[in-house]
Image (cartoon, rainbow, N blue to C red):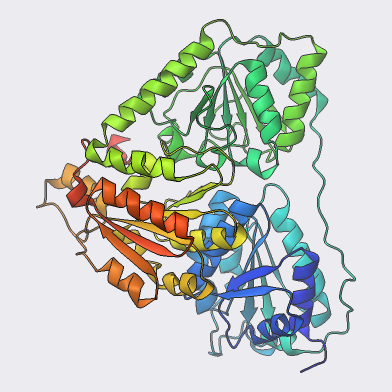
Length: 558
């Protein structure tokens, strides 16, 4: 086929949005799009092995690059399969575009049993989308793709879905490529009265803390936030998506340690918290039991966020970059001191930073060697992806140093199994950066088929699988709540041969039972820049001193 079709209009819209790679699986309900990608030759199409792999890869790509991540699925079952990864993108405010087919528009909403037909597919997509669209004519497709891409990238960023009936994909398209330019929405400046009120509060503080979230990174506000932290003389807490705003070896950076008892005590001592681009989600505040300073100034682009989880004294509703710069300018305008914090406050911050890390290290037992062995292997640009597993929860998300934004990815929905797809997307988006995945044996098996994609694309991902023979967190919780071993059900999974699995895909593998062998295996894989699976026997390494049970409690205990 040489005439322009609806599939060509999709490709035109993607190119206008600056897209050069997509993840997905070809299907009878998206073939014209894939055919247009093939004929155009400008967009790389990476075929994954499961649609959740596609949505997870688009999420990982978006998080590491800051660019739009795109994935393509089929109608019905294919779109439904992708929902786990799309949920993660929604929770994490990742700019992701989901392009999915739809059945022939003649049969829509009739329930006649057309292949891949599902009731209200757009409603399903809408539940996990910032915005959702359905093409109703071939000539509207290109503009819809551009609009959807722009919406995904506009703050607050998030996943956007576009479904395109298959007959419209095949139909001739009369619109010319390039007629609809991609639109970027300019950041809206803050309200002057809001800034003045916030600065009045800030100027009176002497024991300040700043809490930076993913909104700081999304807005490109890292430099401004660092300047504010230093101007205030504040300690810096971060959400998981805010890690790397300030290098975690900086004395002012407390990091992602809001669960720590001493950090919470420090927050009670502080007389001010400036929150920037964070939502104070339940897992990081023990479902809002964490006490924050009485005076809270909250900066967020979403007007619904300030005051939702904690009462605020002042709010600035604007992009993190322009609002933080406005605060800095206003502090200069009133002649505020170069450093607002009282003498000794920074020393107190540093003492808590050090003692909280020491306390957490003490819970790890011999497994602290996994942390200490890995950290020197990683240069500041290494992207570390953490699937939901004990090694990630205890030290990967908290103690493993992060020095740059967009180099630390974890599941903010706390789903298991998204790590490998996210690492895949990160490796595609940042080909010069080493990528390391920390995964548990239970979660890894949810997406192990994507090893085929890693091998096919020769992505130099170092996959570290921590093997304890089951769903370790849930097993520990069952032991605590229902009695050791006798209270277990569904959590012991056996010990598959992960090295054999990797080898079957043509991927190098090593099984290790000591810290020394673990370090050697990881170092060698990173040096060789090739895919590798390192299988770590946690039983051989030894148990943690304090079994990890997370922060979730039965409702009566909350």
